[in-house]
Image (cartoon, one colour):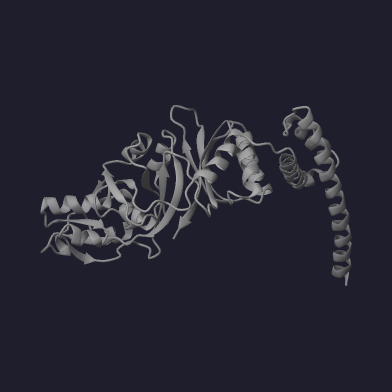
Length: 380
């Protein structure tokens, strides 16, 4: 009975809290109007620090961390409310609206697409999943794919960005900082690696393995089962298969797709040699022009935050206040900087929603450098 009594009291307190919260938010809205009329920034860090110091004096020390969390959340939801009331279009929001209006209803069927590697690469499989009949141009490096897009040589480029087993493709994230592009689509591809050899070779003959470093990581356990073998990283799994065929060697093998066995006249000794059955690689399709196709519900951004305590927290809590889900957060060190990082976010937010517009404002406000990479649909 004491538990029920306390729960009833808690309900009464929650009711009063809700009433006071609504009163506070109404007052916050009135303040927002004044700020807008007088061109005053929404966020006032100094005022927030003063308020935190004041309320901390009202509670015992053991309650400080709890009260701090409560007020930091209150500040975030108040700012989100004020941003909504003070919303005005920005150059970026205008650019997004323009792209939505001008983009065709669907991706073209037969575009010229840049991929890294050679015929048989997983990038080719991803490309064929995104487009009906792509005209593929192969390049030797990831950077060449970015350059082909920037220079207008190809309309689109397809690149691997992360794997469910081996993690992020760090080289891609580093190149993102150097190049201008937009993401227009993404796709998840089931990746099955096969052990390929030249005809007549046996498993016991294998002294060297050719493959891409991601595939090597995904098959680490299987490679260990082969005993003492040399590992030779290649630019691409398909390149590894081609290199093995051209070498004619019976003491080497390649970890590649089963389709490469037919393509390069190799023999498959064993299928699905990756350590985990659910092995997926996510690919992105990039373009030079911002294109936003119908159904876009995922957004990617890059940003550099001020190098001071709480910067990342403010960015994350702002997204939480808007109800925006973070699918991925990646950090990469900035070249020639002292422990500064670029943060990459994949966010779930429909490009047509109000929260999307406020999200862009919030992230721009929180960042020292902000880059919108595009909004798109992911195919699986």
